[in-house]
Length: 450
Image (cartoon, rainbow, N blue to C red):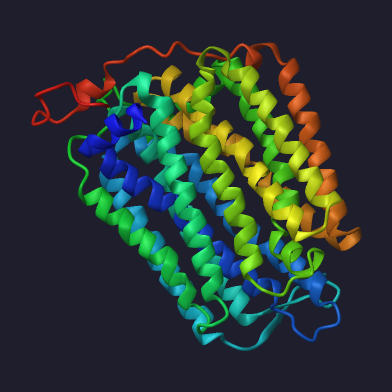
């Protein structure tokens, strides 16, 4: 608790914590409301369950394809512009999209659009209108993340990065738990769309945190700065030059593919595989995963992972795989909810280890681009996985989809353990001067945490 209290007393970190955690938590609540609406979008239709599976897969595609495109240049924006201004602008865009989705759900325009080649598959008009708006919300958050993650080393010292990241993501995930449960509880008693007030409030809180953030968060000026394109390519060149990070990115590519196969259908899993008609169960599943991730993101710091980060990451993936397999094998809410807690625990640990390691070993003036390059590489197959998840669910069954995704993740974890450079990935948790160099001059009584 000593490290946490020291960080929280620093106003710059507290403001950044508020902005980042609220922004990261907001899409979870939005997704619960939208997913539940799409899972029940085909009442009294003969192939309603199959149509819902495909509609959810398209929801995933509608967000991941534009977010992948945005990730190509999001890091370059973070490394060329004032990071606070960038975070403020894109968060306002996410807020506007959330309000617009609420309007669509409230008005629920009638009609249907046939999908070519879909064997009678159609999309209700209101579903089709949600897709581009959801894409805007998630793309805005994608543009927010590199700026936020690159700003963190400017606010805390390198020896505090593990604690700071754990605190940020634990707070975000705990907010996700509360927001997810709150949104799911509001879906039925209130008119459609009003439950999206929950993520909207979080995005407003993000604006408040950004407004309270003092000091210069611009990247260090670079002599002979090239064009936007050449700067963007520098992140990919750096990633290519670091074999350990490249192996980690390729591993994440496969892990995220298999995760997309399974979890694009989580709304359908809650509604049909677990045979529960209350949307609070979907909220409980997602919130249990968020709670587990919150616990994992802070508890991993007890293991002093810095000197063996690569080996720890491989072990965490194996644990994650076991929990996905269990979802397919045990089709009862009494097992699924605690299993989702364990599922979240391992990625929560993974995120803290990954982010602290990258922030500590990559130059800050390049950090935004490297994180964006990793995101593009890590999530490149997510759209394929989401569509494959829909097709696989239609072809076999929901439980089989989860079992296959889990065994695929297990294989990836084993390969990570065998990759020499990845296994040796580590860093020395010594102090850095980045925070002191970027701190505002008014905080001079004692060296600020940065």
